[in-house]
Amino acid sequence: MKEHDGGPPRHPLDVVVVGSANADLVVQVERHPAPGETVLGSELAVHPGGKGANQAVAAARLGARVALLGRVGADGHGRLLRESLERDGVDLGHLRDTPAASGIAMIAVGPRGDNSIIVAPGANARLTEDDVLEAAALLRSAPVVSLQLEIPLPAVLAAARLARRAVLNLSPAVPLPDELLALCDPLVVNEHEAALLLGAPGEPDRQAKELLALGPRSVVITLGADGAVVAEGGAVAEGGAVAEGCAVRAVPSPRVAAVDTTGAGDAFTGALAWRLAAGEPLVRAAAFAARVGAAAVRRPGAQDSYPTMAEVEGL
Ligand code: ADP
Image 1 (cartoon, rainbow, N blue to C red):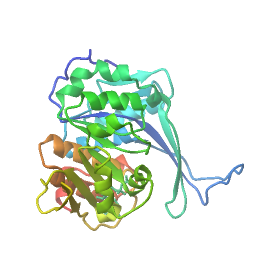
Image 2: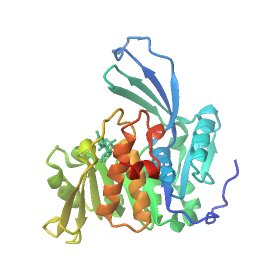
Image 3: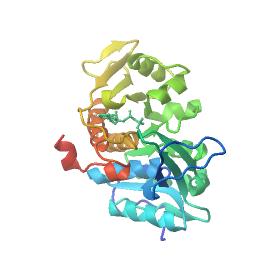
Image 4: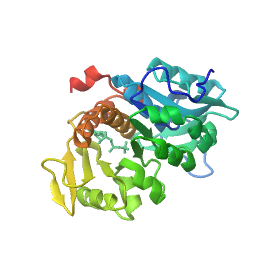
């Protein structure tokens, strides 16, 4: 697969996603196996996934010009991942073939939709700081770089340093170095990730302020069916409750019949990154992203469930 030589892309980009691509290997089970136990499951279904690829597809399907910087294996799963990204028009000039197995997620789905997941990062774990530095021109060319944590932290940090604006979804949740936290604009977390970072669960408005106090330029907490809360430093968000120099604003999600919430956070973040790249204020971008997240839970799967712009407008 031909790669760019590190120069800027041929077309202007809205968003560069630096992140993971995984093949999701999904099996339905009557019940989850206990340690040492074997259970028979359904036929295997293989879907394109991984938080980086999901963000890229979510934004591209809405109409964003997106590139994905990452690594996949030169194997069948790698080809599946490339094909799905190409179908949605994601620029793959910086998706490198790697002498390792493609990342996979082994997903067992129980009768009530309860998942247990094992991720084998494979090629994703080989993404280095040097890979990111080699693509410096690409990263600097885009208004927003969108990040998550299924790739090594040094690569994430290098990308955030180069970004004109870094959006980081803290998933899977790990403690972040202060330098990386300070570069997030916004830091995007769900309720569990917020609790993990703060050491305890709590009321979302308060948690948003506490997260902001950790150093990011702005914070978004996604709240499933309840939408999201947005916190920004300074009294800038219109109508927000202003306290200690920070504004917190609730963003609702449309009511939908939720079928499968897999990948909803990735859809939210991809959409948010795109609207920020288009110059929208954070609160308005988050309101749009909440509609995209809501649209995505109406269908099963992750990327398969992501909406087009027409579907979001129809909500
Ligand atoms: P994650 O997938 O990271 O746990 P959430 O579950 O908070 O993230 O979902 C992300 C976004 O998707 C929410 O902010 C919301 O806009 C939308 N969403 C998720 N679940 C629902 C739901 N049941 N009804 C409506 N919107 C939802």
